Length: 204
Length: 175
Image (tube, rainbow over all chains, first blue to last red; front, side):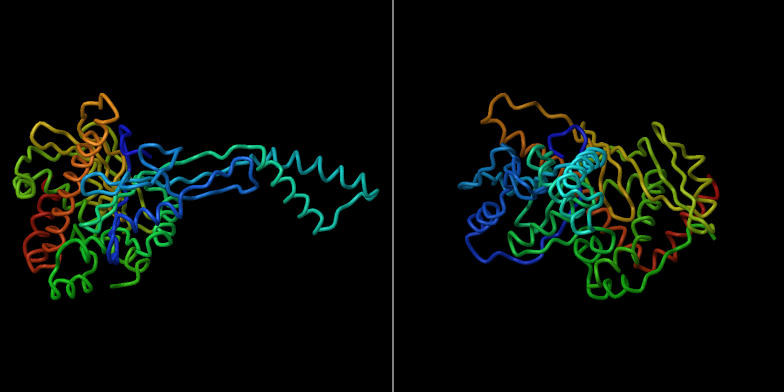
């Protein structure tokens, strides 16, 4: 989801850990190393990586192209090839029939069935293009905060994994407890109180 | 800090209490909100409130939709022990307007629209356009952050049980 869309969803994160020096270069290296790779005409059915915010299908992290004011702005791209179950079934049935006819048998072993299924899946993956999904990321380095423009569970999990791999920093999702513990500027005694609270009935 | 997954489930109630309290503040105490934004004009209930009542054997979910989503049905849900789990709001500051939905258990924001800005005329204008958008996102998120922090401090103070919850109960019963 683009932050330029007319309506957006945002999941907020706190970035834990620090980059020691040459921050922009270190972030650029992480982005370059984990740039999305093209899986069209390849066997892979899924790819996850970073791409440029301003040119999502032509990622380029040279220089400080991802730096806007106090923010690092880039995007997470998840490419996936979705093969409809009915298409897979059709091609599997045809291929299984061909192999049985070649072998003169009227059955396939469990292992042969799996091989046929893998072969069909790979052949179809070579032929169909991946569907790209792009989610913008806004990282305020000084504030150690990050906004991810999606609430989708799978996309958030991919972000957390890739971010940790790319920058060796971890993302803590902001939800009621972490918003209270990390972002509310509590004293030690207030934190102790937070550990003790339980739900209040709003009606007696 | 607690394990993240444990903390998420254990403190879901805190987000739902925040939204329920926030609804009360919207209805009865708008002046409090002025402390968090010099240009504050109003915070209003938008087009959707979701309630959940876990006091019943099987949790009951009630959704009220429509512009200025209804006070009467909502208060009835609260009287039966439900809490607000999702709240769509309209935030007005100076002449600008934001609309968004906040979910209690995750504090995730969805259906967020920010004030319109002029489209960039060239590629060179893109950076300024982007920074203006980011400023508008940040303004809302900072407002919510400071307001949630205020709630948490109130929630863990003696004033919560001693004063605030009594006032909210009176509001629920008199509405």
